[in-house]
Amino acid sequence: DVKVTQSSRYLVKRTGEKVFLECVQDMDHENMFWYRQDPGLGLRLIYFSYDVKMKEKGDIPEGYSVSREKKERFSLILESASTNQTSMYLCASSVQKYEAFFGQGTRLTVV
Amino acid sequence: AQSVTQLDSQVPVFEEAPVELRCNYSSSVSVYLFWYVQYPNQGLQLLLKYLSGSTLVESINGFEAEFNKSQTSFHLRKPSVHISDTAEYFCAVSSNQAGTALIFGKGTTLSVSS
Image 1 (cartoon, each protein chain N blue to C red):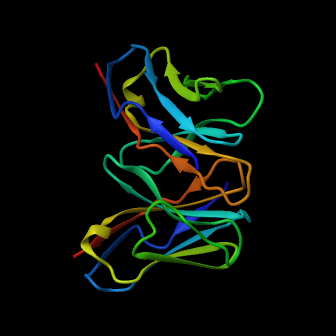
Image 2 (tube, each protein chain N blue to C red):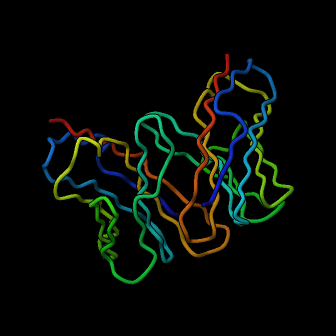
């Protein structure tokens, strides 16, 4: 089975902190994604990567950056956390055109 | 650019009634379409997918969806729902072009009551 692992299920951070969310997949997928899920807004794409060191902005990249130094790992970075970044963050991976497999999510609270 | 519109944010139904969750997409290239389900307090699971071939696709728990290219739709249907189908359902679109992302709709909450 494909496994996508996010480093934390719950995280509480203070405003202004730099926050790292880590995601690892074990199926050699070329695509990896970061979404945030908010009630009524569905899943909104923050960034995705289709190859090592390659990244593309999604719909809401402001305040975020990403890193993909190895194929299996895709990190989301909140440069200076703010309260409006309190959300559920979902990582996913896929082979192009096929379905994406999701991690369990990280519920981030910024206080 | 691709986009997905789920036309209903909430759909309340009674047990054993039929249901249709509507999804329309926009894309300038060939698409691949997916329905995901998220049960309360759980992660996203793939429900069914259309990649090619028959335009009618089915899931193992009785849901089906039909790809309609002329109407750019991929509606999800079930002839008789159960309480356990209560969940949030997401429609998503992708393509076979490298460098294109999987884009989701805003979701439809299906609430099944007795």
